[in-house]
Amino acid sequence: MKIETYPINNLKIAEIVTNKVVLSTPEEGLDLLGNLYYQGFDGIMICEQNITPAFFDLKTTIAGEILQKFAQYRMPLIIIGDFSAFSSKSLQDFIYESNTGRQVNFLSSRSEAIQAFSRL
Image 1 (cartoon, rainbow, N blue to C red):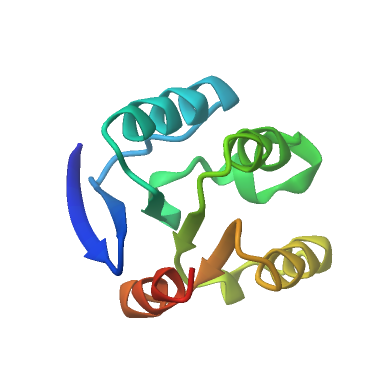
Image 2 (image 1 turned 135 degrees about the horizontal axis):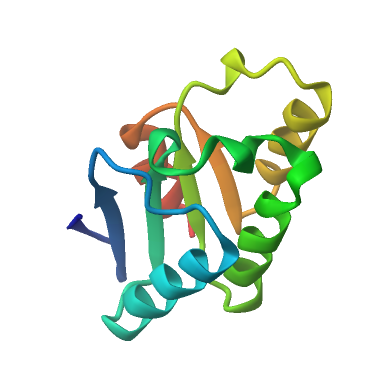
């Protein structure tokens, strides 16, 4: 796993760059969050393919448990991907609601993510 750093305004943003799944459990989410927090990062970008597919099935509760950690520690998280492929209305509603706030956003590109972080 590689961490790309983006200085945006006065923020230090991490982008997770890998072709592997790095978020499968709430514990892995907390480990990632803690490691990046202690390295001085103020926000995190991660691609959809780096997150277990079970995350996007809200019945598993993995999404809620992982995102609760990021909210609790006030670490903004942007998940980048094509979410139109998911047909679940509850997931689409969850994404819509998340995107109205600043803590967790689901965006389609790195450039959108960088723009969103520049508004923090």
